[in-house]
Image (cartoon, rainbow, N blue to C red; front, side):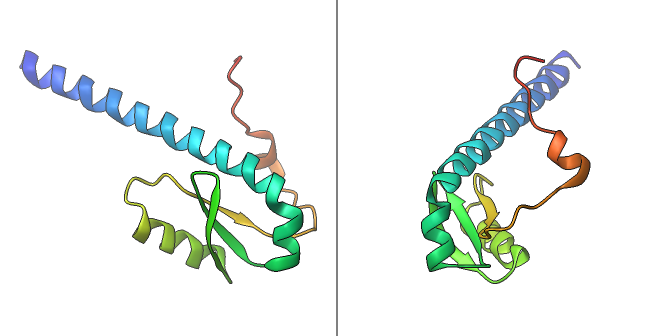
Amino acid sequence: MVQAMSSESEDKAKQQAMIVQKERAIEQNYRAFKKLLPALIEQHPDKFALMRDEVPIAFYDTARDAYIAGLDKFADGLFSVQEITARKIHLGWFSHAAHNPSA
């Protein structure tokens, strides 16, 4: 019984570490994406970029296609999908749900 509880604790710790790793990858990809955005708008307007390790890997017509490709290519889930557009997008309450490390 004690060993099962220990295993559950280890699994939860691994899951939490993976969540943190994914959040970090998304944040890093987004920072890189913002820097690349002016060039991407000219080269790939209205597409969706599949990002990995701060690099655009491929471009797709829909967010769904980019996401599915990300799942196929990166089993660890360490990728993000960014829309290449010049227009500002309001995400409603999601735009206020940013991670706050000081909280």
